[in-house]
Length: 138
Image (tube, rainbow, N blue to C red; front, side, top):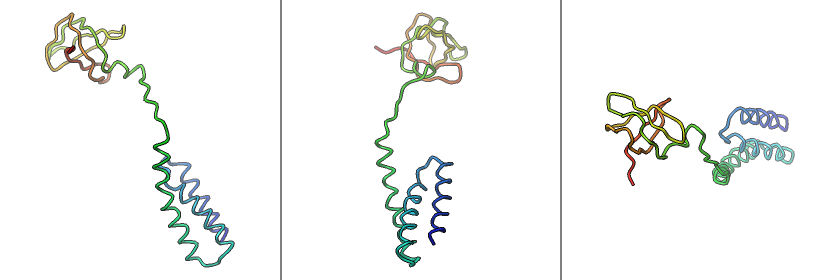
């Protein structure tokens, strides 16, 4: 039975290597425990019980691990202008795309309301190569 558990551990290990969910890793660990248990007892029910219960009990560990992993929310060049202040260099109307200068670069811009040249705006979002803006509120 040791070889069967070894094969299960290998298969689950390969499955985990091709996924990013951290689910089968806990069954790999419980499979290793069941493999060592098979050296002590021949009772297949105890081995399967350890495998299933051990894997299920280890699953909440991934939630703890996910919380400990720091996520670096550094903005890229693409989205770091969101929320910044820009200057309208060409009028923006509902029917025509205007232009806004933000962070030293000119962007095609659109808005829900008409905005005149020389008005300061806040960048709301980026849609392809255009930005959505609204009048800057102090």
